[in-house]
Length: 459
Image 1 (cartoon, rainbow, N blue to C red):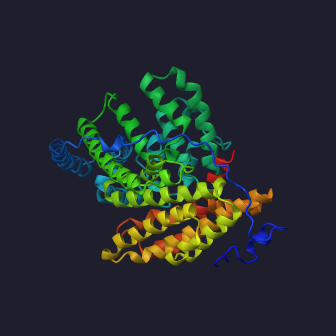
Image 2: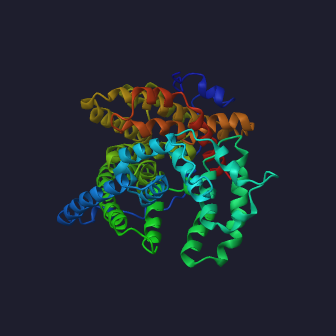
Image 3: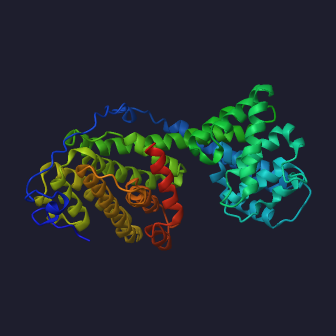
């Protein structure tokens, strides 16, 4: 629905008693501190010779690891190897090999390690992470006749830690996994002071926040620091992890260099001094979505859109008057350059930043036949603008909505539904038209994530 221009009755409806031309004074922007990054990422040296040497060594190490995967003696050895590869952040280099191994493990009905809590829990976690429908009934054997986890498990710290991490992949109604979290947390917490320093660090780290809830790339860096202290570490895996981490980090730095140049040329915070300058922080969000090299373009495009949205968010949050916000929302709804001359100068800057960024992305996607993705993105952005407008309207009238009404809007204004669409836009053919049709319908998983995001952010 296209909002009418403020010369119509909409402003009067929103603000009874006005003549439709007056403005509600909302020039109360937050006092955001300036960016701490400046031109930091323009000064990074790129030692291409060194990077080429590292890349060559990585190829050699990859071949060695492929042989390890092929020659694994049993499923237990395979699972442990796959887990280390994932924790070190190099599993993306062996996607096909890992998927083949997990498929075989899933189809196997071997009971050789059935009584090994660590192996059972690790198998469960890895299979669930990769989309296999493995039943939580596999943990029933670790309970006693009273339905409680066996007390003998208390001393199996490695098994408890694996069960703890696995339990966070539970779904509603899987009581055994809820009980597992309580049981493992209690006994891991009580044992941490009596463990060797390295294992104690692992346990404390997990109890602070489980693996499933952590940012992958930060976790990779942490695990490398832990793994290099392990007596039974595999030097090939460790060398591969370190070299690949440095190579991928160099790529991330080059992406930030490109983004910083774009951001400085755009000069959005210079022209909109009330807006936040958080380009690097927004890039970190994109990097948290996908860190792998093959998603380089997706990260850059995602960050550009998020930076443009951030300025729009700050306009709605406190700077724009309601009359101006009607104009901005109408412009986003129409998505047409013809509306620009109807907008105040600073609203033009805000709107054109978003419009031009999306247009640039469309032109970049067109040669691959992927411009069809842009209408989905526009719909997400229009929904976001409507949600921002509704919240601004509530605030201007001092209206406190009931929880359900609030959540209907807040689940959109938290940006997750739009970002679900945006995350697919820069991806290659792995993102199909069916994926966009799914995303634009606000799937339950995205909306549930929105509730968590919004309620945590508001507390």
